[in-house]
Length: 511
Image 1 (cartoon, rainbow, N blue to C red):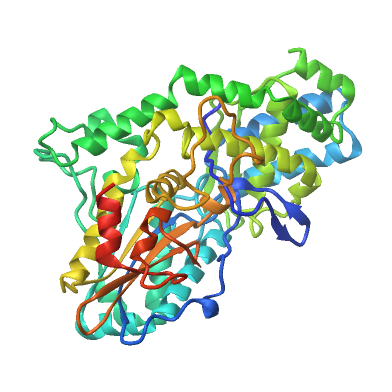
Image 2 (spheres, rainbow, N blue to C red):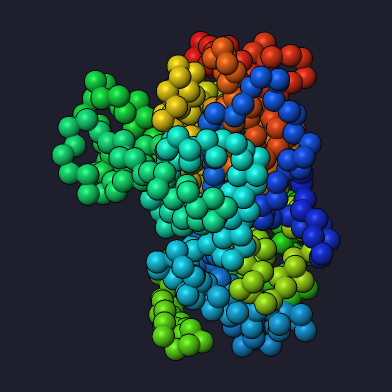
């Protein structure tokens, strides 16, 4: 299927349990905290929380564009015209239309969402960030009381993309709702920019591409003049990564992943429940194909908002495998839109086949965004160095007694969280595979739903005692998590999740 690459990632568990049973949503997995905060290790006696840092993916969202849904609907129309739909298949078309309508109008009437339509956060996404903020406040109440009493800043920054900006809005609204005195403490810093850039119109305060959109730094907007620019290494790393994404080697690897017999078997098993054998054969033989062509228009219930869109023809379904993966994308998207889409897409993708499709998407993401091929070194995560340095920079300030910032809150995307997990060297999220070994669930622990579900987050809670000793605890999706194994010596005690900050910094900076 020729299409824009889909967002991808991986998981600790292979499944999400819900009312429908076992489901496999990969990086579309709705967010759930991985640990009950009541079970967190208590800070050592004499230490209090003095700062916290957050990197969070945006919350659950709708489809990113008018692509796969329209292409799949056009395929369904062909089957309807051919009389090639099963009883279950006949129900698919109306359900796709319900998803299309929901995406056309997504965000309309929701305070904090400026432009309704595709790509916006859903009600579930809003709830994910609202609840994440409430749990942060509940975990660190004294820190936020201290912030209000001493007028310490809460720094807020996003990638600048709508759903990340909106996540920042919903998160901070939830904090302020809990503690109204935090409102005047919210600050939005100036963006990092190439040295010598005089016009910052494309870099509004509170947004930062070098920190939170580094996978797409562009020549026109972000190019640095040379090695003397502190951001030059980040720009170069982004260019190297983007070359990899466009490379023949990656394309060949992706073709090999999609050519696996188990995918073809899962695709046929899925489609046979919806279409007749003759139609599936015609699809595989090139006698039937569909693309996201034509247009639709939907109006809100109050008649005050209308969205009209036309497909660009760039998303094409030309095989049974294409059709099954397109359907899987709608199935996964529906998991993030329970309040907007009344249809149950789990009817169309059985769990056994969903697991296969998730494993294929995980394989594609592992090589494009994840740890990838060992022979490539840090190619896919080198660009995260500026972000990692920013985390250390905030912690450095606290360690030297600079308490101006009570928190730094960053809102971004899966493409940022995934390399951050890799550059941190986190267990299960950073191990590479040699070029000769093809990723599979049998030889790798890397999973999209663990590394980058919706609202995935990395948090550093920073503690200090009266003598100025500074400790750090890492939470990944709100689970107490070890830093890389090489830094075990920085733990304050065997089995503890608290690390001596200076030793931890030395461990990362010396490698």
